[in-house]
Amino acid sequence: MLYIGVDLGTSAVKLLLMNGNGKIIKTLSKSYPVNFPQSGWSEQDPTDWVINSVDGINKILKGQNRSEVAGISFGGQMHGLVAVDKNGDVIRPAILWNDGRSEEESMYLNNEIGRDKLSEYTGNISFAGFTAPKVLWLKKNEPSNFEKIYKILLPKDYLAYKFCGEFVTDVSDASGTLYFDCRNRIWSNPMLSILGITEDMLPAVHESYEVVGTLLPEICERTGLDASCKIIIGAGDNAAAAIGTSTILDGDCNISLGTSGTIFIASDKFVTDSNNSLHAFDHANGMYHLMGCMLSAASCNKWWCDNIIRTYDYEGQQKNIKTLGDNDVYFLPYLMGERSPINDSRARAAFIGMSMDTKREDMMQAVLEGVCFALKDSFEACRAMGVEIKSASVCGGGAKSPLWRKILSNVLDIELTRTENDEGPALGAAILASVGCGEYSSVEQACKAIVSKTVTETPDIELVDKYKNRYETFKKIYPAIKGGGIW
Image 1 (tube, rainbow, N blue to C red):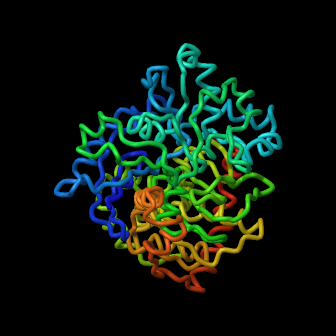
Image 2 (tube, rainbow, N blue to C red):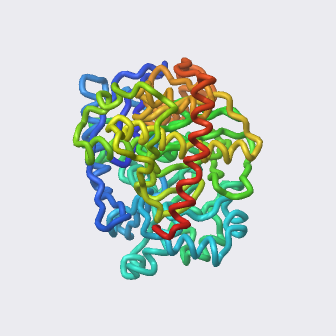
């Protein structure tokens, strides 16, 4: 049988076709726009997700026997607010994960409701990117739209609804709403009361590998797929990427250098850190995980190359970077504010340390290093909890750069591995589809059969020491700028 994984990303939807043995037959990507109606705002038209996903399925199945497609599942950008009316129509553009407009509402939740209460109710504190403060923002600023709401969905769950007609979500994606009790894997009634919403306004919650329906006649007609094709709900993009990299056993770690950057640590138990600087979420395999998330990772490289030095030759810009560990230039990668661990939606990016002999290569290197230093912030929060990480898999667009991987390995002082197929969330979604359809008895069995890893980077003692010293300087820059009242 065949399985389709749909990775609903921020800038594009990626589709992957896999057979029952785990062989990837074909992948493709279809892009769509992100809209920034105001500074710090980020929105999308959910219709674009559906159109491009359906078109992508048709393209990826060209030349294939469509009756062999047994299941479709999803990995999706998390935290987005998709509000639909009683007819299932979108009320307003989706407010995305990297949207910072709800800072005031997030501060209200943290300071007035209280971090201790939030942690008790959900296992987490509020970040502006989470869904709960977006709900409060919509309620306050667009009351007429709020009154129209029949269901509040997450991005991939809207796609699932358009495919199978069911309002459903999974535990990993629901974990990022801040109105889900992650410890008990249920919606949090105290949080719903605080937000002024009811459980019937939310989708039914499933484990990530569960079948939630079959294809609607309209989708069958548009794709040529059988009505028996199952929809498996799938997972939030980071949990899906963890499945795609076999980050499933207690203590396993995956680092994503995608649009955002994450450090993801699988856990058999539900645990939180004392400062709640890391997210404590449910995993797609029925277990749990800790996660540190930075809002701008590979997008920093894209911004620097596309917008500033005006080139799309990303690889070429890294060729002249020869000396690591000695750069005088630093870069704060806070282009869209920041989440873990500083939780400051007003933070902004900055270069510091330039002189008359600073070259473009120095600034390019600083961008790559700055992202790694910011990931190390979350890494150090893990270590403070007593979690020692000796190795990690690395995925995402930035992980394709050998130079970036080398910097990351030495900044974190760990061995890095990569999967044979660097397909992240799309592969994870396809694996979840295969489990839901009974091809494998469990997520663990499927990952063992499908995912293989190879070591790509090992730290160099001299470079590790140099980057330890540079990280100590990096840590001082944000507090100094914030303390100076610039932000």
